[in-house]
Length: 435
Image (cartoon, rainbow, N blue to C red; front, side):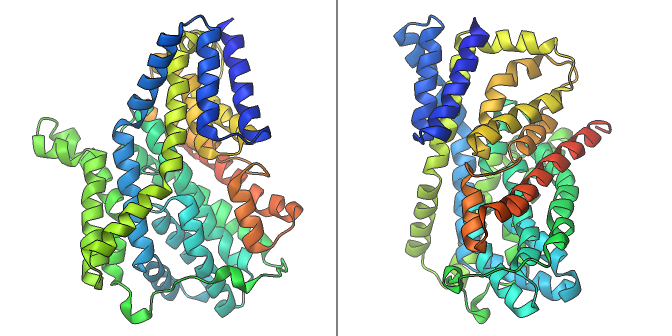
């Protein structure tokens, strides 16, 4: 019976979000209430479980995602992203333009959330396509594949960061492993796949590509742009290693906290990309406040997923599902990937897919003797990116900016996302053999 109730709840969640277009957070709360009451919990217990699920899930995550959004805003508005792209293109030359854009997209994608990153890089892609003579898909796909990989695989992006905390995965290790798995995923879904799109004829609307470009002489230095943009990676990766050698050092413990590393990165951005670029603290603070508004919806989605996870735990459903799945003869990494992939195809949102999958499967993972939570984060993250189609906001964003038919968007965007997902799973399974 618990499994039947849970399945009905998941189907109801999919219908509410994908068919009836109800707000995702409200859908999560309604389904959580329904599962709790149908499982025999009283109203007070259901309310307590929802409150605990929301609070425990957001916790440190609010700081990590909030500081990440602030960092991304300053990287974008200061022109640091523009500086990185220009420098990499000069370095690689026209013949290797795709690889330069893939690398630029990956570096930019670490601090920038996907939708914000998309809006920032599209005008850059348009300008580069015009100056190089290549079509926009040929130069754009490598950059967008990199953004997608960063969004699905790497903390401090919302879904991988939230999944990491729910599985008690080390964020630093997750980031290191994620970068390793990202290399083949970006290469195959980006430059290699884009070569098959070189002959596409696009009828673009130039009015869509206007953006506030920072004048060349006002761009921040390249070294500063790279250092600030990559600072979360540097700190998370470095202190993930250092704390293994100095586990009792209090300063190392503080610096190893993901939220503290993100805060230091924001302080660096405020000074080097804001104050040193001639901005006053008031205008910088306004940008920081605006950036937090942009992620409020994401935080609500994560909170709703946390409520559902807690309800499944409070009713004993998670434990019941865990016992059943424990006897299923399938690699847990493949199971995590497949569960997120199924929900992604039904719901569309990568964030919802990843968080719902981990909420269902977490008890089973904890019982695995050789469980590697960092790899599971990547398996679920890659599954949550598969086959974006008409129920995915990114699908329509891509379609409208590139002025493609639905058929051609499926042949380009959807294939790119599927390659990112499948290659990601293969990379995780190979990495699992060595760590």
